[in-house]
Image 1 (spheres, helix red, strand yellow):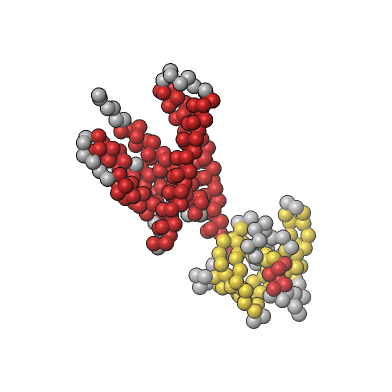
Image 2 (tube, one colour):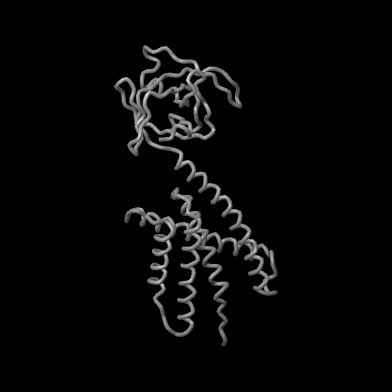
Length: 270
């Protein structure tokens, strides 16, 4: 009996699944996007199962567990570059879980298709294989688009949100600040950019206190009006930079994300 081994198709299958699992694991773990490295690592690591399968067909046995574990470790390390053993272990466990879920979904869809009689059972498994391959590629394309957009949003938010310490009137408060390119609020009196803080943060640091507010006009899609603004002492960032004596306007609803307590203009980046 002659066994035909289509190495190119087998590599394409492994490459597609590797890339799919890397994307969905990164989305789950909120890993920063690195599309080029993910594609390269998925492509290179897809070569190993092709080589192992070819060697096994030649009569030489390669331990499957060792080769699979080595491939998995290399793929995860190369794609995500974890900074510690704990992160590395977390990435591997998540990758394995999604691998199991993906495999289970494939077998479930195959069984449902066979039982429902979508395709003739005997005309050839070739027809069924082609149909299943086309459907799988279409589904993977849709999922890839969703994951790529979601990871891009996560990455943008990660770069835009910073931890900082607000100091005012001797009080310290750890906050999360968001750099927003859409925030063009400036003082019409001095022309300086104006940050926006939440009402909760304003109450926490004792505003308005004994200081009269400065009224800053604003215009937005929702309307226009006046915001009460105060000059705050200092905002210290984690990288050692700071902003001193800056204006901050108080808003009842600055962001739908309750973790964000301050919005900064891009011109105010340290």
